[in-house]
Image (cartoon, rainbow, N blue to C red; front, side, top):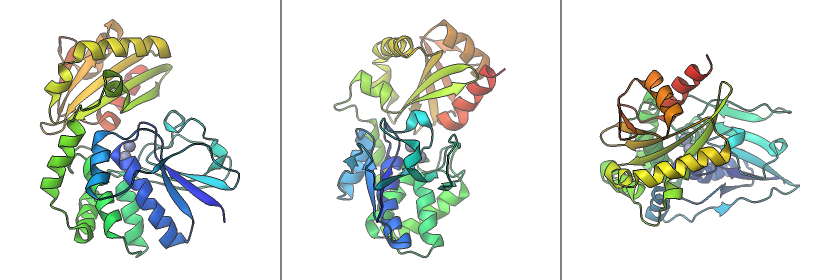
Length: 309
Ligand code: ZN
Ligand code: ZN
């Protein structure tokens, strides 16, 4: 039987790792398919914490896809997000909650919903099919929902996420507030994290009108720890812009408790654009944006609209 390699996006976040691991169980139990979870990069401190908390092994790094293997993408479908060696012809499944950006040459199984996390989607599929979820998968999926929706408080949260989180916790039985506090603390830890890591661990390139735009994010409960390194970060971002030939580069330091963001503005082009789009005041190369925490909902569409004019 053809084996399915399940994999999330590059610069993996918790959602892209735990949804892959739980999807492996779904493939086996619901569809009787041989599938295996993989990862497309180094794990961040939050994801390491989640796996360690639940005693789950880190998935193997994805490499080449064999002749008798196919691919299931979770938590992404854009070309800029897939692992290097992927041949799109190998993709047979997509489970995602981002905008659809793929054109396929053959019919594939594709389930994309406007929901808070891919973990929510995988949980929903388990419940729809009445397939029993193991305690470990329930814990992982719950962590994925809480991570991606910022404890069900972020603007991408839907009513459905809240209901699914509640149903998962009937199985997982974790103390959510305590767990989230620890998970966010791990997310904010800069232990073993270089400036290069800060700007690349949650970074995404976008096509906006005719422009290529990079937007990095750092979610934290302690923005001061990152802001202390602002000058080094700005220098690294300017280099990245130059090296990659990007039109614009932005970086968001998101305070996940206070629910706001400091947008790092690296140069004159970015300043003009950010002032036009977000209307904030620039101070020390940063623009404070109250209530802004989501790149997907509150930064990328607004920049895309302006740059497509
Ligand atoms: Zn993700
Ligand atoms: Zn996600």
